[in-house]
Length: 427
Image (tube, rainbow, N blue to C red):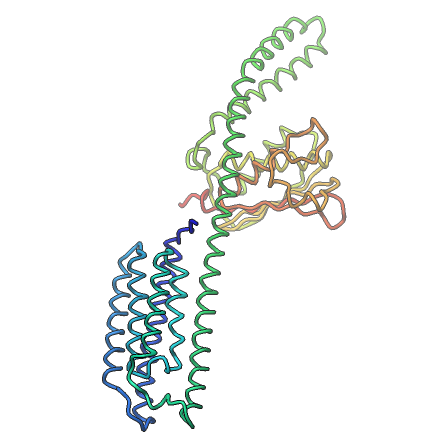
């Protein structure tokens, strides 16, 4: 059976827990020794136990200093740390009654940490070493009158075992829970990374499809433009009405060619070289003016407000297209009028687009923009790519898009939140 490898992040975290716990144990031993010198009236190996505790303290300090300059930690180093804990604990227990010492259950801690941090062979070596040390302490130890199983000594021993169990159980539960939460957080991060990778693959596929489509549309559009121009000239005097319609047709073909040109020329550009510097208020006004030329049949009521002077940003074409997509969808739903509100400060731009349509069902409102080719429009009226590409553009810049049905039951409100950190020009 193949076991998964532990991540460096998890191993480093667990080792920090080990050293932190050992540091607490060091000062705990110091305090216990001080208390015993004042309140214990029985023989106790103060010097031997104190020497072991001091050596443990120096070893812990050296381990902390060594870790400060290390970017990666090997399993071998972690294994040495846990072996040091087992042998130190064994020596302390040997000096204080062996297996009769109620704190013998602390052998479980190194085994627990080994299970969380190390590969299988190190786990078994650690566990077997702890078992052997425990077994040897049943036969080889220095007797400790404090733990004798009779009278008051037996009662003290039972209470000591209870305290040792509580300490071991509490420490294991706390640190294993912390380790478990770290593993869950790492798994969530991996899941999000996988999801982003899948979205990137979808975008690559869409980009390839768009590039191929743009290339294929170039020739027929050029042919249509030439024929429309010739027909316009030939009907200009004989049939002015048809000539006027042909002029409109040619202008729409030119618009299609302009859109394809912008799409192919902006591919792969960074915000720094894909737009010009402009204040936020002027940028919103120009974007709305551009959209009004595209959809003159729909009126747009606008209201913009924010810090004065407004921050200066790069007019990234991809962001402009994202806003145009939202305005187009609102116009498709309203037909007559929409309302646009913009608010900004020095760090963020928030845009609200309200339409007068029928809204979106609760089943779809959480999915809109999340999936490509998802649309609520009738067949032939939309591909379901506009809002998906808008959401992807905003996420790339750290932004968000939210959809909410209006309280009066008429229409939908789209909220765009765009941080200005990547677009702002420092002056």
